[in-house]
Each structure stands twice: as structure tokens, then as C-alpha cells.
Image (cartoon, rainbow over all chains, first blue to last red; front, top):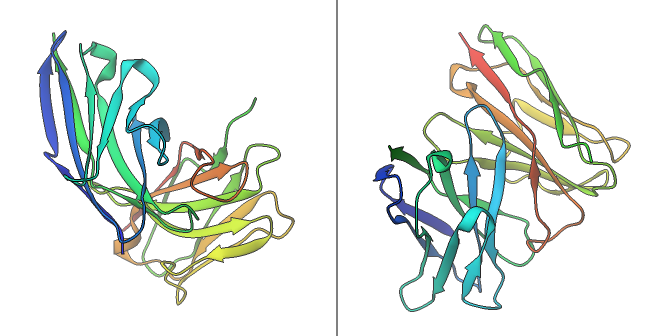
Length: 113
Length: 115
């Protein structure tokens, strides 16, 4: 069975501050892990994914995430928040087959000017 | 390149009525997914197609939900009869092929309100 837990349904940061969104996963098989962003009234867009290669994954818009097997975590970070980063962020897990995708409940990021 | 198209964008129906959603994936994408996103929750995968065949529909409530992709391109998702708890955004996504290494591209969704 696979699942993800996103800690913190709402996160607020000041513009220019570090963004840290937390995701912990549970998987009985080697996981594929994903971060998606969703802007209001839009579909989800892939930010980055981990597919068992490098543990530090760089994505679009300056985001990156590090896979830590010992901590079963895949936290999303960005060194300096921009106003345009305000959105809903979802962590997801799958196995290599992709037959099942499990999304977390999401974290709403607010950027304060 | 055109993205995933969905229609309608919004739908309001009364409980016990039926409703259908349409999805046109990105041209050439073999795999198509339907998700249900209830307010405040993450998307839940309902069904996955590979061309015109079903890969997985284990989370589709088959007593009221049905989906088809007859020619391996467009897909429709139907609910009959609708319940209040079906109020959600229904997202369609497509990928070039099956497997987690292939990126899923999402449409804008159809927001369903059941009254």
C-alpha cells in the first residue's frame, strides 16, 4: 500500500524567504515521488519527480526536493519565495507501473509581500 | 501543442440526475486518467485507460460511475444517478504512455455541484 502525508495544510512565507513544504510517504515498493502545483481554476502541473536516480531533484521555477529514504520524506524547497508561487501544492506517490497514483491532501502556500 | 481539453467546465445538477463529462487528451497520448478532487482533498484516481482498454478501475464506484474510451482518443465519464457526495472537480489527464516515468498532463477540470 502507498500513501503520502503532507504536514501543514496552510503555509505562509514572506516574499524572498525560504519555502519548505513537507511530504512523507509510505510505500512497500521503491516509490516514484512527485510534486505538483495547482493554480486556481487550473489543472495540476508537474514541478518535479523522483524516479530512483539522483536523490536531489531539481524542478521548474527554482523548486527542488530531496528524497530521504531513512526519513521516508520528500520535502519541497525553494530558496526565495516569489509572489507567483502562491498556489496549492500536492505531493504524490506511485510505483513504477503507475497503475495507482496517491496524492496528499495538499498545502496551500501564501506569499506575503 | 494543445493541452488536455475538458467540457463542460461547470455543471450543476440535482441529486439522482445523470451527468457526463468529456475529455480530449493530448494528441498521441496513449494513456488517459480520470481523477476526482473533492474540495480540500487531493485528487483521487478513478480509472486509467491504455488506448481503449482499462488498466485499473479499482477506485471507480461502478454502481453509479462509468467511463469509456471507445476509439482510444476521447473519453467520457458518466455518473448515474448522482449523489450529493459526488460534488467535486473531475480532472482528466493524459500521458504519452503507461508508467510513472511518463509525465501526466492535466486538463482544467469540470466542477460538478450536486444539489
